[in-house]
Length: 295
Image (cartoon, rainbow, N blue to C red; front, side, top):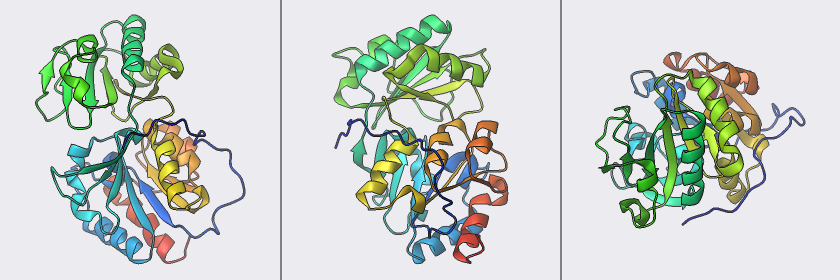
């Protein structure tokens, strides 16, 4: 199902303290947050996730990863097995296991918006190279570096990949990846947001100058808000975890939020609380405290 309706901004101002509100949903980023640096899920974290589900708290993995990269947590989905992928561009049912994920909701990047964003960013930051992420396909420009452990379906300029009649037209575009070989990551992000404007949502989750460009109003926060509304869960009942700029909106929206000890400065400023680093099982530490009533 494709779902492109505009939604109310997921960013909110603080209201009343949420500490007394029992959590009904845990939303956690993966890389740099739930996963250790070696991309493993520690036994302590596995146990904490299982205990949360046993206590009736839903767990949502909310990540910039595409669905095909969700094998790292497919064994830990427990109850509902849903994940928000591509920074909010897709809601995926992980129950089918590796290679058999089912798309429940898709919030695509319109091709015209994608083409405009590519052109504007080429002008603003010469040397930018692109890749196109789809529900199942992955395409890139010849000069795009090998940042991902996969072979692209085709190599061509982004304008050709996004054109009518190209091989990509069979599937919706989830996001565009834009890489610059020389710019500082945060400077590249600020420049891209100014250049692209409201045509698309621009964020980043990589330590390099790699940007992720999604549809207008599409973010981890806005898709999580849609999923929570469908379940009758308010933002006060959500506890969120993250470490990078693509998590900021989600952490701002959630009733309680935690920045990892290894988080980007913008994330540390946005979250209502802090925990220890991902390699020290910071998500598990907080879940254990929640379940024991200590926070």
